[in-house]
Image (cartoon, rainbow, N blue to C red; front, top):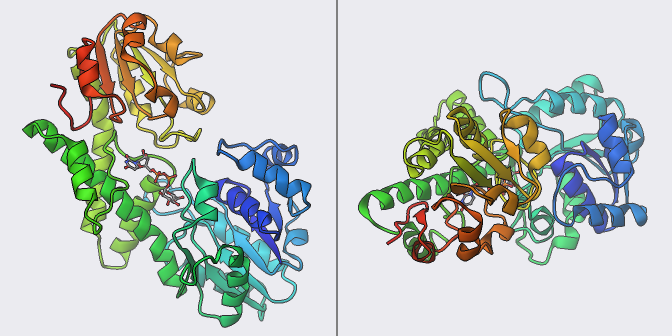
Length: 437
Ligand code: UGA
């Protein structure tokens, strides 16, 4: 089979490389010249474990190619995937669909023979129908079906998520399109119920509903963590106990500084707008957005309180900058407002992240000290603030901290360290929803 992937961003690259690994011929179309050049030279512009190798393998086998010639990619393709960005539109929280519609128009001009046009980008309900009408407007009578095939992969484990999905959702009613897409995913069809066929609007909504539900779960446990701190309970035990109930499940119950990244913040906001416009507002998701925004903004106050109420003149080591481990993605990361406030309040802020240093530079204020290692960040620091739970930080030993740091304050926004051990080593330990006794 042959497919075109419009957009060599995160979703396009990962899905393109994974389809190529199945033996599908994949032509990725990337319009940004510097990104395209990097891809052609085997340089992957994002950090995602295993992706560089998978791309190299696909290219070496002749299954994966990168180019800017949309016509060449679309000609003869069984399916064309639109995987361009859908950022939050400035001002109103809606997803900005201009790139999606522009891609649809361009594709419409290049069609030759029956083609399935598939949205892989996260798009609001109704976008598939709009794409179908754009195509018929540009090329009346075009022999196409439009489908929605949302992606559920997580940054940091994207390849595994693609290769071992919980489900594949294909939204379209045409049997012909279902057959093309079913065939594309057939190498994954270990279970007969893996692929769910739905209507196009349903598939579009499933994506927003899934992300909003997960964001709600995280927000819920964050609120429980705050409550635990007030009443002297332990959120880790609460999360473990409620997670054992199969109806709740154990995942996405890690409290933290609030969710970030390129998906949850954007998709919850978009769902709020979609629901408002449809006349079925989601008060729950509205609350999730508001509670999470407030949480991220309040994390610096938590650090300042732990440091005695005033950080002027103090040296604070920040470990972890990215919104989660195993990515270099800084989008909407909780570290950004924390560092900004601490620098503003007169602290010397030394930051270290294994992958996020370069993407973080333009986002953090002047005066932020970018330390080459975690040790350099910690050397002589008054306080340690752990923001992202990279594996390498888990192995930091309290006696090593004692030697490196000047002060005794540890603010662990991911509950990575053991409170009792920290306390035993004389640290003033501040976790999330746990009280060190
Ligand atoms: C999320 C979804 O999990 C994917 O299924 C989806 O495909 C993706 O968005 C997308 O729409 O493209 P991702 O943004 O990569 O994936 O990251 P997650 O692992 O979901 O984490 C999101 C945020 O929630 C992070 O800030 C993370 O630190 C936070 N989180 C997650 C917690 O605070 N606690 C948890 O227990 C889990």
